[in-house]
Amino acid sequence: MRGLQLPLSQTQKIRLQRALEQLESLSSKVNSDASVTVSDSIPVNYEDSILKGHGTQDLNGQVVATVCGVVERVNKFVYVRALRARYKPETGDIVIGRVIEVAPKRWRVEINYRHDAVLMLSSMNLPDGIQRRRTAVDELNMRSIFEENDVICAEIRDSQHDSVHLQARSQKYGKLNRGQLLTITPYLVKRQKQHFHYLEQYGIDLILGCNGFIWVGEHVEVTDDMVEDQGNKSGTSLTSLEVQERSYTPIETRQYICRTANAVRVLSTLGFNITLEVIKETIDLSLSVNLDIHDMLGSEFCVLVAEREAERRSSVKKR
Amino acid sequence: MEYVSPEGLRLDGRRPMEMRQIRAEIGTIMKADGSAVFEMGNTKVVAAVYGPREVQNRGQQISDKALVRCEYSMANFSTGDRMRKPKGDRRSTEISLVIRQTMEESILTHLMPRSQIDIYVQVLQADGGTRSACINAATLALADAGIPMRDLVTSCSAGYLNSTPLLDLNYVEDSAGGPDVTLGILPKLDKVTLLQMDSKLPIDIFENVMQLATEGCKAVANYIRELLLENTKELEYRRGV
Image (cartoon, rainbow over all chains, first blue to last red; front, top):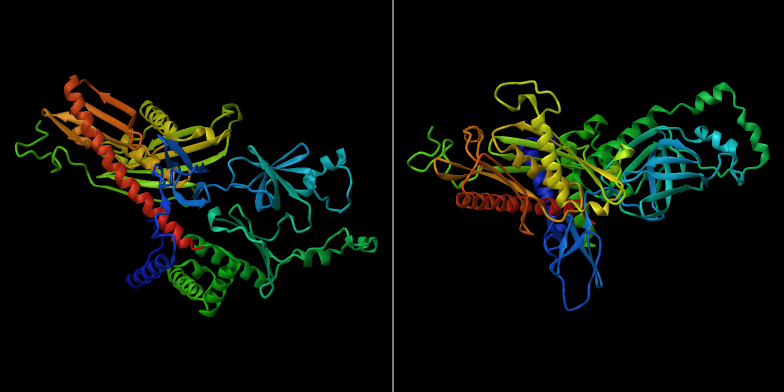
C-alpha cells in the first residue's frame, strides 16, 4: 500500500481505514478482474480477431500486459491504461510547462513527457496582437516574451513520433505569473471541456493542466488585444504608482492561493481524482472547520477529506 | 565452522530451504516517477526510477531505443563497520552494470526511443544478498513508474555449505567463502537473465543449487505480483471515476 507519510493517531487511523474501505466498495471496477500487473495474461475471446493496444504484448498467442493498470476494451480493441506513468500528450490538451531553453525560433518546454515539447515562435501570438510574419528582430526579442524557467500554459498542437509541438494562439495562454505551480501525477487529472477556472469568490485562477501540472494564481483579466483600439495604447505609459499597484497581490488573495494549493496537495496525496468541484469542496471544508492554511497538510484534515470524499461518492452513486 | 547444525538448522534458525522474510513497499519517494523499498530479512534496499525523460547527455542518445542507466550505492551506515567508500569503486561499478543489464533485458526499450531511464538503488542495510534485493527493488520501482516491461525480473541467491544447498544466504554465510549463486529470472517467460557464481561447484550439485534458487525467485515473484496488484487496485479505487 502506498503509505501516507503522516503521523496518525489510533482513532484517525481507524477513521481513514473506514473511509477508504467505503471508497473501495463504491468503486465498480475493483471486484471485476480489470486490474492487471506486468506479465499477467489478459482474458480475451480468441475466436474473434482482437486488436492489441498500448500496454499489451503477444506471448505464445496469449495477450499479456506490459504495465500495471486497468484493462480497457473497446469492441475488439484491448489495451491497458497505466496509472502512475508519465504524461502522454494528445492533440488539444491544455498543458502547463516550464521553459528550459530558448533556441532559434523556438522554446523548449518541459511538460512531464519523455521528451521536451517545442513551442515555435510562429505558433504563438505576439504580445502586441498583430498578425504578421515573424522577423529576425522578433527572434532576437524572444526572451522578452518567455525566458528560461518561466512557467507557461499552452495547447498541444500535434504530437507525431517523439516531437510534441505546442501552440499558444490566444490571450488565455502564455506566461503565468503570481501563483503556485503544483506537480501531481497526470492520471489524476481528467480531460474535460474546461481546464481554465476562475474562482470568483476568492479572486484566483485555477488551471488544471492535463500533464499533471496545476497552476493556482491570482486572477488576470483576459483581454483580447486584437479588439482593443489604438486609443488604449496610450495607457501603456503607466505611472510608477500604478505599476506598483499592479505588482501587488492582496494578502487575502495570497492566502486563498495557498489554501487552494494545499487542497490540491491533500487530494493528490490521497490519490483522489482532481476536479474543480472536489477542490472547491475541499476549500469549503477547510473554511467551515476554521482551519489554518498550514494545518491543511496535517493528518486530521487528511482524514476529514477522505471521509467527505466517501460521503460525496456514495451520494453521487445513489442518484 | 558449522553452518548447518545436526538438527538441520542454520545460524539464524532457518531451515536450509527457507527464505528470509520479505517485505516491500511501493511509492516511498514522492519526487521519483517510481520507487520502492525492498527488504529480505535484515537487508534493506531503496530504489528510485526517473524517466523516461530527455537524454541529459546528447552524445549518449540512442535513436531507436531508450538509454537505461543505473547507479548502485551503499549507504555508509549500511554495514557494521562504518567505512567511507569512494563513490564508483570497483564493486559498486560492477553491481551497477549487472543491475543495468538485467533490467534492460526486461524493459521494452524500443517503445521509448531517444529517452533515458535512470535507476538509482541504495543499500540502507546490508546483510548478504544485496544484489538480489537491489534487482527486486528495481523491478518494483520500474513497475510503479509505469514503464512497459516484458516480464518482472526477480532474483534470489543460493549457496552450498556443509554439503547442504542453502537458500538466500545472509552475511555470515556469504562470507564463509563457499559457492554463492545469484540468479535472476523472468518468471512468466521462464528464462534466466542473470547468473553469477563465486568459487566452484560440481555440475550435478550446481543443478540442485540452481533449482533451489529458481524456487526462491518464484516465491519472490509471487509476492511482488500480489503487492503490485493490490497497489494497482488501490490507486484505481481511490481515484474513483
